[in-house]
Image 1 (cartoon, rainbow, N blue to C red):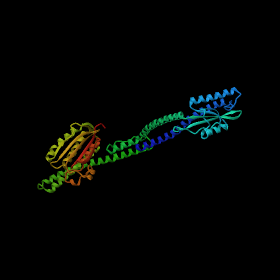
Image 2: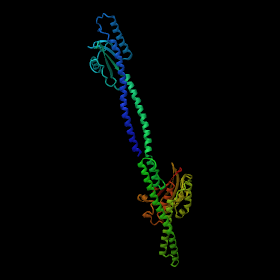
Image 3: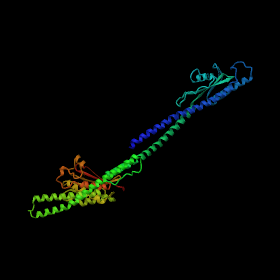
Image 4: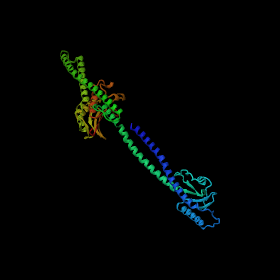
Length: 469
């Protein structure tokens, strides 16, 4: 669920940041340009104050030395201004004739933003704001015009034409800062999204873990229903009620199986005893008596296995740090005389010391059932091998035989209660041994799996943790 929820939150957060970042970038560019425009307006107003007392055109005869001085001062100010800032500036009469300009050959533009600004200034108003210049507009310039007013009339116009290299650099620098801030905010947002999704999905993970515990036999697992959204609290309560009902049903089932097995053992024992007494009055080797005796013993074995299965599913595991390899080697030694009688080579092949967390009694019982099952189906002259080895955070015990093996359909059903392969009905057994082994192992957190053993036979694997649960 996190893989679905987290990308959605990241996309939404990225959309919000972009929606804020683009307008902020536009505002930054506008502020930088407006700062330049205001500076040029101030400069143009200063030049207009100098030019409003110059009345004669350049080259015309003058009788007033003061006016010549003002003309010279205006020209020197424009030249110095252009040299310092690289901004073209000039004062032009209404017909476009220059009163003074820097550089000297600069004239009023005939079209474009400069021509429009000059026309607006002639009408007695400040020129409009020029179009926005962006960092990629390498040829962009900012023209500003201001009227020179004398006695209420516009007698000339001050025009400045500014390059935009520095302004575009400052704008780009501001954009880089905005981009860095957006990236930092995105990282913080992603971290917050991880925490948020973890907080939102924490009750779901707890519910999933409890479901897994119940599925693997730990029926006491429950979910705290006192925290989280109301919907999840209701789900937790419903889950706990379901777990209680499942536990009650399974407990009733186990109790019934245990009670039924226990109650049937006494009548069955009495029945077998009477069969033995009847056999005393019949000839030795009577086939009917032998058949009844065999079926009675088989029924007693089934009842014993049912009782063992009920106890295995009910008993809690006594987990200890156990030398699994030594325990497996010990069980191999115990079963070797029976294997020798059948002509089967039983051996232990693996490490001599591997520790894991297991219930030694339950693990011994499970290994006995697995080795017994392997010896039953392995013909004389073949091998059965048992091995133990570490595998990361777990320990693996493998029991390999070279018997007839099982088909894919039979592998899917092996371990079911009372199930036996149709090809092996003549082999003694109740069909409960592997079920009992699985129940004993599951109580301690171990798993039991089955697979083909190449080139033929069956491989049974027991996996248990190496660290304390």
